[in-house]
Image (cartoon, rainbow, N blue to C red; front, side, top):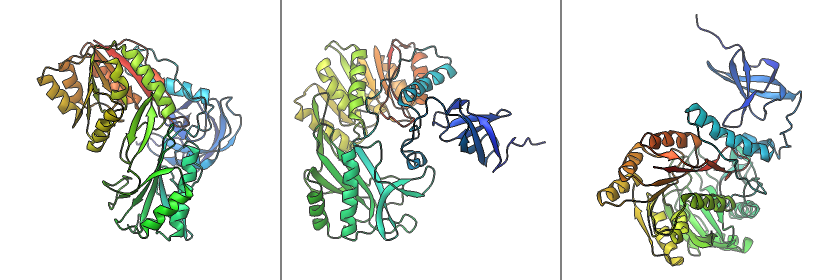
Length: 454
């Protein structure tokens, strides 16, 4: 006989929160059956209503708090939780750092890896840190609105203060939206695949204060673009470039491939670790410059470079890691899949007068194979992969080259742990405690630095 869950939809009862998921949701259990509950913290006794029931777990919402955790802080607004902008905003910042350290520890423990994890490095001010925003535009009651979508839905919530973005970026988005409203630019309708303006993207240099506005449009035609450009410049004197990006696809991907520069050079520049970087609309550039400097400083110090090493920087982007390491190494080779980023990286090397770095375009695993055949033997390999981690083919080609040291910068602890196991199977060891660096306060994401040595 099929066993039914011990709760039913719309059932109400009191319970205690016993844990937090990696997504920051409270966990309660009824006869071993887990219920996931937003805005609930371990130790809290709450009255809940069951909202959804499936075979192995359910979801509930808090109706009332019978007691509150000492780690609870007042939230800035429910929209930040509903949209996933700040799912940890109800958790005090020191407790957020402990939660992120514990995430990494728990994954290592599950994999039976006895590796120490250091305390997470946090921020003095864990708000308004993002140097880039990509905000959808929709029409509500005849007016253009900027905002965000509720998690796992297409329900739009109008927002003007995004809490974790640079406040000047928030102001710029509203100013650009109002200019578009004034010129009667039609908002994108995703159901009908009609309208013009899909997203407003703004990037701002943390040190340079240069600002880029990108208008993401469904069609190549942007009516009155000359007047719109002039009006944006008048409203926002800090804007140094304006770009129209065309994305005509039915897709959740924000940027299309085609850029048309409406004003300025089509890029901004900013500084990181004393170097200047050119940043284009498609460039990957770390979102939190204050924490990125701490992250890279920790990675370089742990790499123990003496100035004589050959280094490979896989996933090199616009060259932020390669160029920052250049003065500490003899020769650096960078590889990156996005050709526009490689073009920026080469330009950034020229801007900073660095001549011991060579950038290649292509798949990291293919270039590792090429370099291996060319008998290139790196002393240090630096990897900063996307959330999916390293491809098995990449680890395989790396192991053929046998670098003495691997510096692994990760944005996803679960794929990090999986990849560590791949290296350890070939005789590598984690020689220093894994260091979490909080690049994304108020969210559940955590960046780490891990050192593996042969």
